[in-house]
Length: 267
Image (tube, rainbow, N blue to C red):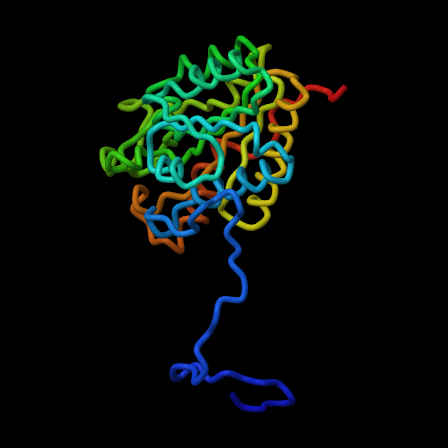
C-alpha cells in the first residue's frame, strides 16, 4: 500500500500482500446459498433476489408458498428458505390456485419462464387471471427456452436470434410474439399487472417496486396480480455477456414495453 495525495493506494500489478477478507455477505436471508450454476450474465438471479427481498420486507415469510415451473430458474426452488412446491410444465398457476383455495391465509407466488408459462401453460395463467384468483404470478421472460437449449418461445420478438431461428424470428414463418402482460391486463379478474426488467440499476429498482405492489395487492385480496420481468440470456441470444443488457433494452423491451399496465384503486 502506498501514499498518494494522502490516499492509501493498493497496487494492482501484483497480488496484495494482505489477502482480502469477506466483510459482509450480501446474500438475502431467504436465499440459502448465494452461488448458483446459471450462465454468466443471466438475469434470473437478479429477479429472484428482488422477489425474496420483498417477501422478507412485507413480513409474510412464515405463510409463504412458492410454486415453481420448469426452467433454468428451477435451480432456485431448493435454495430458498420458504415453502416451495414443484409444478409440472406450465401448471404452476393451477397448483397455486389449489394452495390458495385450500389455505386462504397463505401468501402464494409462482415463478415461471416464458416457455413454461406462454408456450406450455398459457391456458393455466389465463384462466387463473380470469377467475381473479388471489395469487401472484411472476414470469421471467428472456424470449428463449433456456433450459432446453435456447430455442424460440412464443414471446421471442421479431428479429431475435435463437438456436432454431439463426436468421432471427420472422412473422411469416414463426408468427408474432405474444405480449402476455397486455393480454392479462385486459381480463376483469386481474388487479395488478406490470412488466419490468433487470438490465440496469434503474429497472431493477423499478421491478422491485412492481413486485412489492403485486404482493401488496394479494395481501389486500384485490384479485390476481402478475409481474412479467424481462431477463438477460446472452447464451441463448448469441451475444457477449457484457452486451446482453443493451440487447434486452434494444430488442425485448422495445416490444414488451416496461411499465404498469393495470392497477386497481387501493381501498
